[in-house]
Image (cartoon, rainbow, N blue to C red; front, side, top):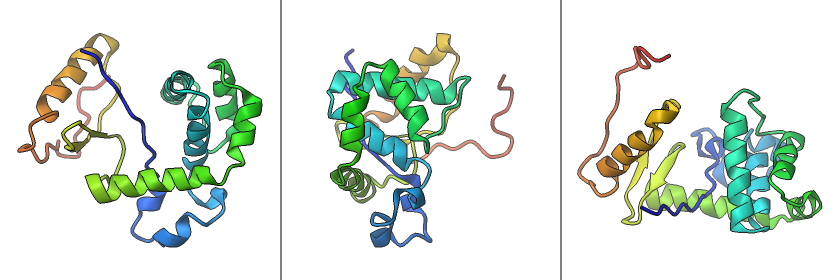
Length: 176
C-alpha cells in the first residue's frame, strides 16, 4: 500500500471561541499562538521541495515528541532542525519574510474548518472527503503499523461511524 499525505496547516489558537477570526490573521506573529512559527517555517520549507519538506516535518515531530521537546515558537530551534534535513537556511530566512505564508496558512485553516469540520489536530481527511480527529498516545514501535492499519480500516471508508470516545478519566489507563 502506498500512502500519500498532503500536510495542511491548522492553527489551534485561531479556532478558539474568544478569538476575533478576522483580526487574528492580521495580528503580529507573536500574538498568533505558539505554533505559528512552525507553520510558517513548514510552508517555507515546502518551497524547497516536497522531499525536503517531508524530512523537515518528520524531524520536527521526532524532535518534538522524543527527548529534546523542541519549541514550536522558536525559530532558532526550528532552523536547527531544518539544517539537519538539508534545507537552505539562507533560503528559509528569505522565504520567512514573505507575507503570503500567513495567507497560505489562513487558506489551509479556513478550508479545514469550512469543508471538513476540523476542530483539532491531528485530523485526517481521506480521499472520499471523510475526516476524523484522533487523540492518541505514541504507540509502541512494534505496534505502530498495525494500529495505523486498524485506524485506516475503521475510518477510511466507514462514514457511518461518527464518534468513538474513551471516558475521561481514567484514560490513559495501564499505559507505560
